[in-house]
Image (tube, rainbow, N blue to C red; front, side):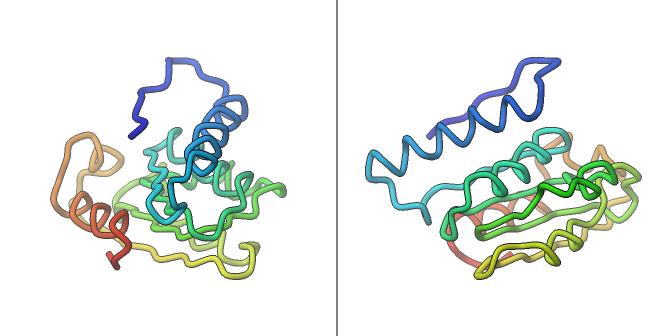
Length: 145
């Protein structure tokens, strides 16, 4: 397992290259892509979105937590690919629905979206809550949210 907290002030596109490299090394080492899950929240979620766009692997799992901002959705270079779960909080003013990514997604891409209603806005993901953690764990295991 690779898990890390990115440094403050990380430049998004540069970090995407880092994550793509980590995933590719896992695949090259023989890890089946379906056993790899890239997850991120907020800016980390945007990094996960851009990783799904750059990596172009059908079987890799992605989880986007409050990831899709207006700025990200406006980018013309984003064409996600993979097995994608987006989790959004209904009261969140920052993390919007990632549904618009479906229009430009690569063929074969699976996109599911789970909408929470905790009332905690963007902070819904600041602490582990079964409302989002359980569906994420099921997704990473190859199931449905």
